[in-house]
Length: 423
Image (tube, rainbow, N blue to C red):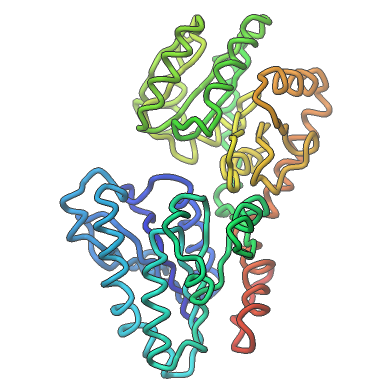
């Protein structure tokens, strides 16, 4: 069975801007492993081949002629790319892939992501209808966030595709727009469950002995509660807990505001870069921070380094005022880290059992929950183990077999059911 994923973001560094890239990479490889003929159509690096087969996944880099004039990344020149994607991709996809498969009597699945692909779904739906083939194709459109909701013709989208989203929280937000979305959870790739190198975790804790290690990885955005994180570090410092906030943001200008605020509140801030992308690089970057309260990492950190930080920290602040799903929290739990998350889209969280859950803008809420946990080592170990067990239920292969395929069968009506693997 053919499966075509439509997404701006993808596996090229050029096309990685946030959680959507992580979702697409994990989902696409899991579909390949589930024996789908999987194609990813994304706004890829203009310097790479337009088509590439990688580990069984068909990569189609679109909008390259535009991207060469916009080298910053996938959303540089966003409007031009969106228009070209909607106009040129559907006819090519239909003629080269969908039409031959449908003429053979096959069923095809198209899964599109975020508001940028809505017009492409409209175009593809029209092509299928005018050729009398709409009943042989299942079109899904998925929302990972509320970005661009004001630009979507929801009534037409309801007629064109099955609308899905990633959490019950997002489903509730969309119901206010008169949209009844189907929840198909996000997942994690199998390598997210690889426990970090024990020696590296031990070295991190030894190197920062006597400090309360707090990590936060999120884009610099006010909804990510960076201000609350700074307030919590201030309060913990006054309590004599010697906190060290290891912060990794992005390129957003709000980061400068956060760090200036930290300095104005009396926190000592340093920016550090990694000399190498592995755990040795982050350990070296965290040398000589005895008198530092906040270390802002300027270098992107890979999954290996994130695993060391998430597992080795006393807590990971992954709480937001608006979190559609919460991948960072789930990634933390997967490596037995202590995730402090909010109470929006994190359907996987059970307060006090597998995570710390905060609901207010009061830093003392976190400090109180954190303090109670750290005073009970048995409970802390139990929470770390429960976190990992919970996260293991969100592996992409399990999401596909237990959620995606059954819902496709129920929603798409009669038709061929793809082969299942053991969950």
